[in-house]
Image (cartoon, rainbow, N blue to C red):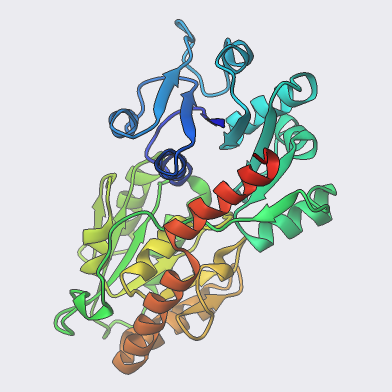
Length: 356
């Protein structure tokens, strides 16, 4: 069976990393696998070239954009692919264009975002042969709002945590000395709401000893640096650039915090728990599926900054609670977000689509 995974651009985002992980798993399982990328120049291009799968780039010419996929249909047919899997919004939009008129192969649409859904992506989700969603919340949202995914051809496959983390929670580097290290590793985009996190931290009781590390890149990064200064907490806030692998950062931290306004199933929170970090986060999208509320973290009604502040203060002050939640976070992440289980779920899906 020949499998194509469609990806618009290999930037260092959660979806792009998941694409390479799934491709590698399928290839290692003996399936002929190719990642077809719409445009070159992504941070993950080098990593993709080192994989066990093929990588093909479409020739966009001088027009470099995520949505342009010249020659995609011709390539899929000429190379004899059996199944094409859309990864990411623009790739799924292409599936929406191709699926109705290209019956020589089968299409899988994936849905993994809390953002609004473009018309072509909705078309893909409705017309593809199979639909994969990465959280129960996202599937329910599709069913209720758009009437999509109500049949047996839709299924939930959780993201696998694909980075290497401590093999025991005791390996976590926290020593109980010095400030409590708060962390948020996420792209600096308006919907990620790092500015809101800064406001929340500025309201913490002045006697608490804490430090916040924000890691990532994007349009909001400089504005966050300026806001931290205006709030008078710049001496407590560290802003790092984009981290290819944030696992070392997590292992030096104590609590993961997340105030995003739109999410599906955030990889950052899953990865943080793999390092034994309890979570404090707003209840948006599939965030509540990434940890066990009141056991491995604290889930806050969206937008309630006062409750967020109170909950974070409680976790900072109570070392016993942090330790209990740390152990629970470590166990929960490994039970629910195994990378092996994710790949196996895709293998089983493909087997059902094209039985031998």
